[in-house]
Amino acid sequence: MARPAARSLPRPADMFDREWEWSELTAFATAEGTGPRLGVVSGRRRQGKSFLLQALAEATEGFYYAAVEASASESLRLLGEAVARFTGSAVPPRPADWDEALGLLFALARDRPLPVVIDEFPYLVRNAPALPSQLQAAIGVRSDRRPRERPRILLCGSAMSFMGGLLSGASPLYGRASLDLVVHSLGFREAAEFWGIQDARLAVLVHAILGGTPAYRREFVDDDVPDGADDFDAWVCRTVLNPARPIHSEAPYLLAAEPDLRDRSLYHSVLAAVAGGNRTSGGIASAVGRKATDISLPLTVLKKCGLLTAEPDAFRGNRTTYHVAEPLINFHHAVVRPETALLSRRRGAATVWEHSRPTFLSKVVGPHFERLCREWVEWHADPETFGGMPIQVSSGTVADPASRTAIEADVVVHGAIGQDQGILLSVGEAKWHKVMNLGHLQRLRRILDLLKSRGVDTSHARPACYSGAGFDPDLRAAEKRGEVVLVDLQRLYHGS
Image (cartoon, rainbow, N blue to C red):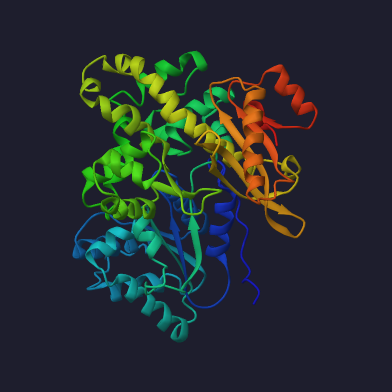
């Protein structure tokens, strides 16, 4: 069946990026066709979901309601008042229950497709757990009996564990939504543009702390942008290490905002363990002082909340590594949390940063740079760079019997050449602070030899070196001979 016709709406002038999200939202909101439609918008806090939906409601003259933490009766009253403001009614309706409230919302779209946005939907469900079932029933009944009512209902929320289950097989809304939009952080290139940072090295350092969350620039650091690389240390002290700035206490709030997290002290300890470099479940359990079985639930919940990512090893199917998904949380647990007492004192930031900077570079920036390199392969690298289309990009470890050690590959690329899938296209190493040389290339060749000895097809695999500090002349010469792919900061941010 062809998609119902939709109007193309110009993107607001003050909206940075988000072309794809805006296109999907406007297509959903203005699509012709009878009956109601349901969409879900989710994403971690501060990504600009509310801004997008408010702009959509304004552009389409739609209805926008932001729920607050309130009792069921107060929520119904507030919704009635919002409906009155939207319709211009002098007397706000007083819905007695959510069935009646949903009737009011559906009736707003009696004459045309109309977006009906309910922001912070989890707040409403907290005191009205039957609301998803009631919404499902209302959509079904009105699709059959009142086809002229054409609300384009958009449910939005930041509680990722809740929103992720809203359309799952066990949910009453399963199969009802025609839009499931996740608003992600800005990519690292877009983030640098948003911050107005042209120095690629500085852009990596800032991104390692604040990631691509749009709100952090304006609302949380008051548009304080580092004035060049020489200002970075001072910028850290006056922003994220400054207890007077909102960004300083944001990381703990991100954890507190997730309703599924019960034993918060344990969850903080798990995140701190991962931020400290413990990537496996066994290593995390040891750092926390618990058995591996005791942390399986926290790991699962943190993944559902979008605060941890679990990435399978490229070469060992039974091994999974964990990473903190939000850079600010990673920075908080690696640098801020261990120094809470000192940072609470006046002028404590400079002292903390002086002895925490090496930890920041090794525990935060180094791993973050590796992830940016993998992201570059996924989103920016030309297929010709690796001789095929990258499909899966990860890290991996290979056991070396000769040295009785495991060699790590930071960027492993599997992809497609023609109709062949899953071909090993590249193994790579990423170094943030080291000028890379032929020794690094020899290490990658050793990995390929070990893989080949185990029956892996390495005939298409190209060694790749990624460096934040550059490459020596011998490695550059190897690049000219076609022996290695080199990716420096300039290529990371501007090339393919």
